[in-house]
Image 1: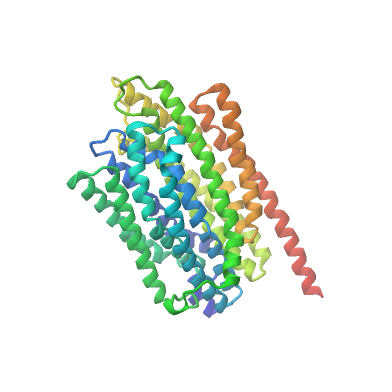
Image 2: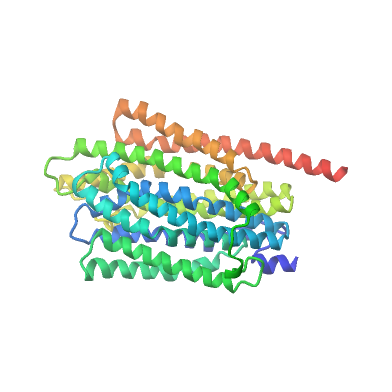
Length: 475
């Protein structure tokens, strides 16, 4: 077992779980938060530029950018599961093949994703309802951002590999350094050079290039089977097929999530156009929604650290055929993620005004446009943040299913319970009521439905696998 500990950093298949899960997810949470800080720093600093619509422009690109990155970077979930499963089964050669195949895939899919994103940016952003200055600024941001997607893809795949072997500290240190670079470059490009959305996009690309190259260099120095070598860099058919089999459902799920969010963003633009007076200096509903959404991402990425722990711990224990232990993994992750969700929600609610002011969204009674933006943000917070624990419950079941290799099951549950439900909601309830509340309330309802369905699926799969394992032992 000493060999497993050295290779993985954490022995996930033996001993107490709760402390190990917390030890695994805390550096991962900080890593995730630093990644979100890239976009948050973009929006905060761009709010200091001379473009009043800059914050809204960056905010409107979020669901579209995520659509492209989820499709092509979503395969990194497959790399995480395959590497973790190989390590749990003590298959060093399999882990090495998975690592080198995944790195090749990251570059190929990164280039493809960037090219597609650039080619369809104008069409998609226009279809979402962006016009005028808002559209022009959003296009500049997406063109530069998509040019850097190969670096973003490489960085995400490498982070998945480090997580699979139980090392969450290395990505934390690397992203801390690149995050500082990102913020400094944001300030330089916007305040010193006088750029706007193009400056913050360029800073994000450079920071991701630094993190990707640094992580690749550190993986070359790894002492275990995940060590990277340029000589071994090739696509192994078996590893490729397995990564695709696990990653395709995750990519499809992420893409359809983004499409549903793009529909929601389009609905928000409709409300903005209806309530904004002629001659307004900026689009207030878009700006308020973008600010609240950006803060919300800190909550999502915090609980996602537990989701990643559920995927990795489940993957290693499934590889070792310790399905009884997977039940304990799920219970511990439910507890930890619920606590994280409550704490982060309370902090965001208590600090809402100073946090929103960082995005230039403030309560100014004598300014009706500013009040529209502020009330939009408050509405999103009230309706979505208070029941946020429901998302945490859904997230754990999703992670355990993926760790068990049931990525397609996880995808189907999520698509029906969230994406399809929200689309149907927009075309029925929102069309009838036409309010921001009627948009935002669809989220907690879908979280509850999907969480219940996911839990039922996990318990069913585990019961079957435990029974199968016992039958094999008695033969």
